[in-house]
Image (cartoon, rainbow, N blue to C red; front, side):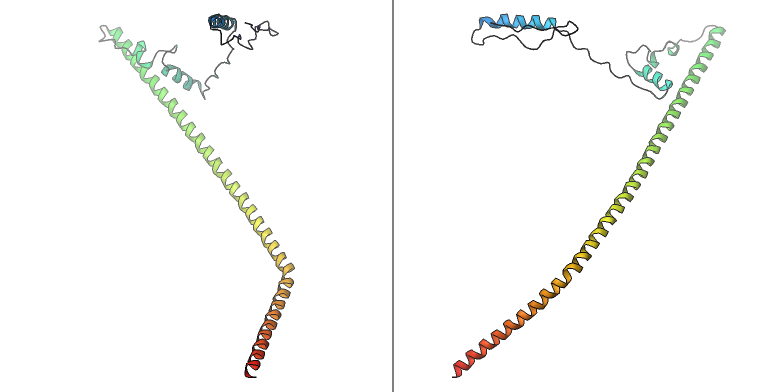
Length: 203
């Protein structure tokens, strides 16, 4: 049995370029070869994968909104926030005033959040509208260019056809004249043969 040693790279790390070789005909080597393979795999360090590209948000408000909704994030879900838990009936005037203030804060927070989401929605809608308008303008420009090119091709074809007619016109007229003469001669020849046959029959 023979094995290929693993060389080192410039950083001193092992480079695993092949597996140990063993004769398949001898089963006694199989376990030993598998053990060598496992040892080689333990020496090989896993590759370093690049980090996942972080999500980019248009605003800090959208980022925090996403972080709040993500399960398992450092922020608690909105339904589990302490200030939203049911506190029961206030027992003192101070607790009542505090509860009213907390309710006002909750309401204001949700109102501002709703306004921010509405602004973000309108901004996104305007962005898509602008993008669609730019696509429409681009399509109109491309249609104009294609139409212009089509007209140029049609003009070239017309000029080429016209030039061919001017060049081949006399030849076509000559061939037509020759055809008429040949047809006239053939008819005369047939008439002559018919007349000669008739004279021979009468004689």
